[in-house]
Image (tube, rainbow, N blue to C red; front, side, top):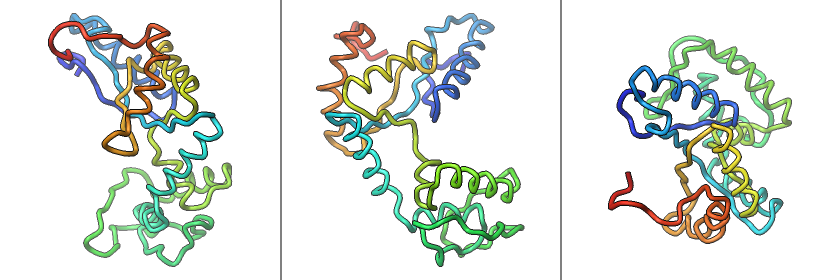
Length: 211
């Protein structure tokens, strides 16, 4: 990628992770005779936009609850525990049992995930995370599977995007709206003008292509 790519579509959950990836990739360009601006780092991100930050947080929570059902949450953990967890309450605590060692034993027809780490270690980390944040099974799965999300009013989201770009966590973002088509309409109408006022979003395209 450092030798030939024009852009990398990445995924990072935190500013620190984005900065580490950005620094690593951009640092490889010089050995290929390229400058940092010749390769763009564009993480995927979603957004929850509302009139106030509080309303946006409530909206984001509701969206994630719709995306991760109780059954989906249990099946996600089954890939770690390697056993049927359908008897557990997805809105209750994590299983107190240890993962079942050995080959994946769930019924055929379900997708499986191979873990390169000890499932017992993964389960321990998940329990610690759930206990620290007081999360149920479903809330935990929502927490660990959420992609980077901009949540807030138009002003808050514009400031967050600008902060990440200015501090070398990304060159921009690939937005994935929760609703399609039309999911980007409010973002384009409310957030883009604020980014343009900051001078960090173009007001017109130069040339005849998007490159």
